[in-house]
Image (tube, rainbow, N blue to C red; front, side, top):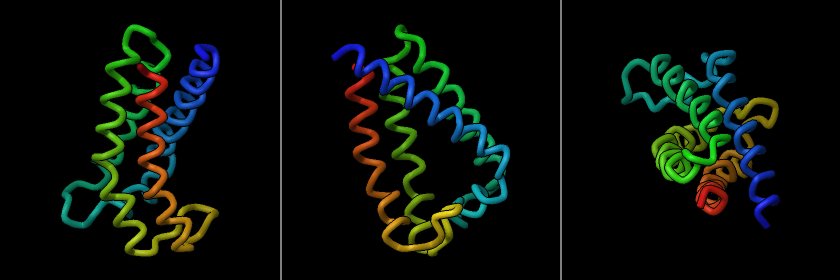
Length: 122
């Protein structure tokens, strides 16, 4: 079981590293999903990108893993409004387009992702 959790941790680390780097490579797309009430959308995108890169690195350190699991879960809850805004606005999700099932599925997947993160980091 421990090896299985470690494989998932490495996968999550790679996922968040890719996501964090994407915040810099496609900052226009990410800035577009920042809810309009928030100021400085590009700054928010860059900061969240740096946070995701930091979480990805810290997931690889067993010493930090339990704290990172909690912080990463809180982070995912904090960015949930952007995903909801994206779904409500019908903004396309890359190559997947703007199919409401895909957009709302992305919102719904936040919760199993949080549960998975908490499980593998405990």
